[in-house]
Image (cartoon, rainbow, N blue to C red; front, side, top):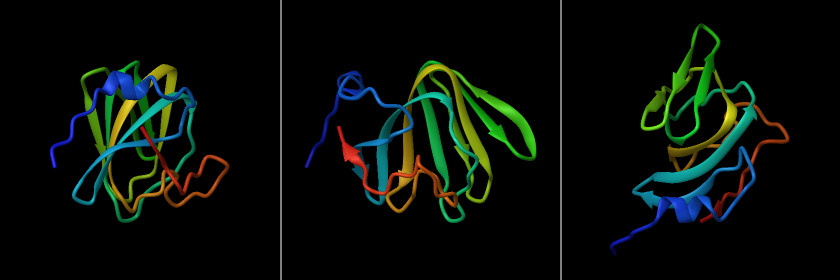
Length: 121
């Protein structure tokens, strides 16, 4: 079955930050939309890689053992499995995430920001 989605319309359906929403799926990979603002938590994913694709705003990816990486609109960053990271958005930022369906948004760290049942847009 063919599947088409307008990204801006999907982003307009929610306002909360740090809560990913499933916008689609390709095989075992979710296409998620999220709005970031402020700081997330330090975490890592032992078995999954993540892709952060900035649509609007600016993402700073803090890494424990490396310099912070800035990701501008139109750019994406792949965080390999096992790399501890903390996303930061000093301004409101819209991000597309490509992640395995098995991934937990806070990885190895359980906190108030952990979401185990994702909504859809």
